Length: 234
Picture 1 (cartoon, one colour):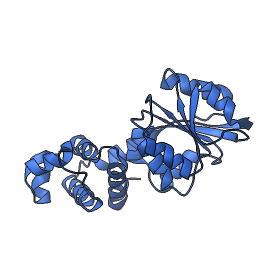
Picture 2 (cartoon, rainbow, N blue to C red):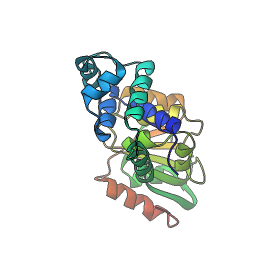
Picture 3 (spheres, rainbow, N blue to C red):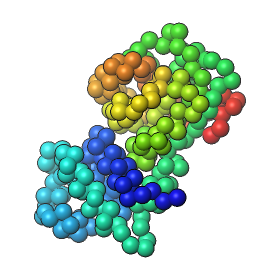
């Protein structure tokens, strides 16, 4: 089933607003859709140079109102028989969840963190029991999952480790969790050497255990988790 126009609007706009670099995120969507900057600028009623300044970050970060106008223009320009937005959103949604599994019984959070060579940055993992895990591609999650789709990453329970890979500085995943009604018990970030202090602060505010994984690769990380969850489904 193709995403509706409003669904596409919310997913794209959400990915831009949550991005650590909104201008770059806007440009990424425009490029994926094959829409020329000059064409989009005309649809927005502005000069290509001004639009270029927004996309490159030379102008201050655009507000929510401008982002909505930008995304609405993209959706309109993507109209026609060979629409790209539904295809992109559907594919990214399917690929966002890299692995998900439920443990056969409660597992100490410290054991999961140890298996992923994770360093705790916020929260207290002692006495925390986990019942599953989900590994998601942070970029595709922010681009493709919103509303009900985001809830799917929690599997059978929120008492799980939610692992984000391909992370820049860690702000976007924690912002996405901040606005979600469901909260994972533990969040593990894989990718950067250090996290944005805002990400750590958000984890503390949400009372979430936040850790930074030193696993050598995404594959090694997933393999370690699957070894702890024979009932893994992905």
